[in-house]
Length: 333
Image 1 (spheres, one colour):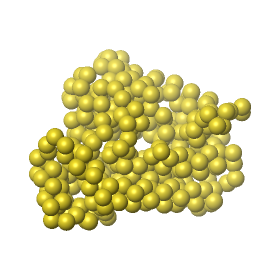
Image 2: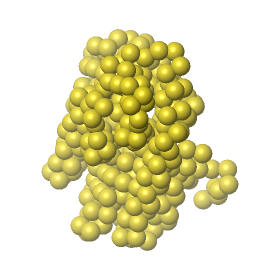
Image 3: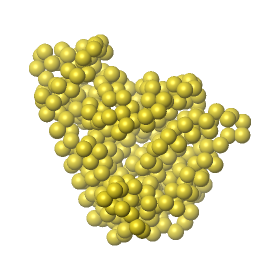
Image 4: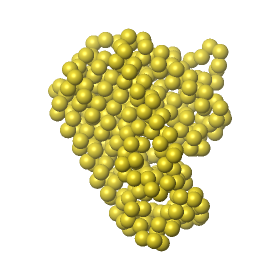
């Protein structure tokens, strides 16, 4: 494999190592998102799936299966399943959040309507379960069905926590483990299961995915206060405008004096936001070191993810997964 290591990211290197499998996954995705009777389904699905996403989650499934010596065909089904679940949640999220941009492009609900986004998301969930069943593994079905339920639970918890200044770091972690890390950990876990890996290896892969997902979301929450639209795929400050209690804000509220708390109560608690409030919020986050604290926590979660790989078989994929954990946090640079 002749790769220009200096010019490529860990994600690029992992993608190159999995090229044949990814091609098979993409072919399966295109075939299964088709609809004989409702042409809007492939239109909406293609808009999001083919919008330049990195296929990170399906890559995790393929990588875990390869690392564990998988010999069967069903890792491709499971990788496509993971991508369908992810895409379905994005379609639903954009409706809930009333988002206008995703991956740097207009959202499906903006181009079509909310009804189309919700119903096509439902279709993709149904397709994902069809793919799971084709593997013939009840355990795989159990893992991914639980993940789908946990993702929805995390999203509902985030919805009910929005604007609530009493939201704790413990609640934040529950939200993150639900809405983001659950699919990361399921993606890596089912890769090990379908390959017939020993239980300690399957558990290590689950723990790797869980920690990677937490680090990934913490970095996303940080980028909302300083990333570019090209990096985060949405507008800077969207979380603030949507009154989401992400970890940087939770830490800043915990350190706030009376005047600062009144600011957070007005902008987040009551949703009365004015020109200049985002800049003021960012100034408060910087004043209390909230952004740096969250960056350090993301680094710790990435280190925890890397540590789990000591428990899995030696393989050319393993250092790529370790580098990927570093890369997730390096997006902050």
